[in-house]
Image: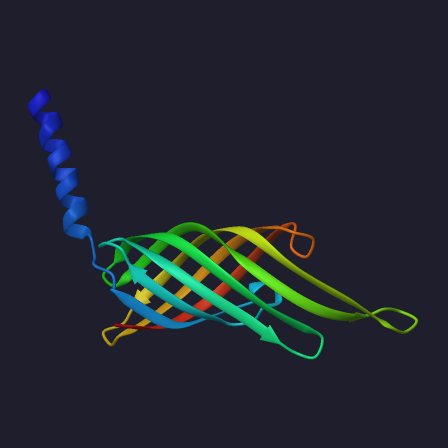
Length: 164
C-alpha cells in the first residue's frame, strides 16, 4: 500500500510539472476597463517563476472636473488550461488619489480631494499567441479605505500586452 501511495504521488507530481508552462519574463501593454473612473491603465507584468508573476497597473485621468491616478500591484498565480490558454488568480492592493470639482444644484461648485489605499483580488483568463502578444480578460474586485472609495467595486477589463 505504501508503494502504491508513493507511485501515485510521483505520477501526480510528474503530471503537474510536465503540464507547467513558462510565462513570459516581461509583458507591457494596456488594461482597458472601468477602473472605477480612472480610465485605461498602463500594465506591466514581471515573471517570478514558471507559474507566478507580479503585475503593476497605473491608471490616470485628467479632465475639466476630475484629476486622479491609481497604482495597483498584484501577485498572480498562472495555471495552464489548454496549450497557450491560461487562467490566473491573484491578490494585492494599491494607492489612488483624486482631485475633483463638482457642480451643486442651485449653482456653485464643491472641490474635493483624497488619497486612499485599496485591497484587490484578481481572476482571469489569457491567451498567448505565437507572436509576442498576450490577450487577457480579468475580473478585479477592489475594496477601498477612504471616503471616495469606501465600498466594494468590481472592475472587468481587457488586457493587451507585448511580451518580451
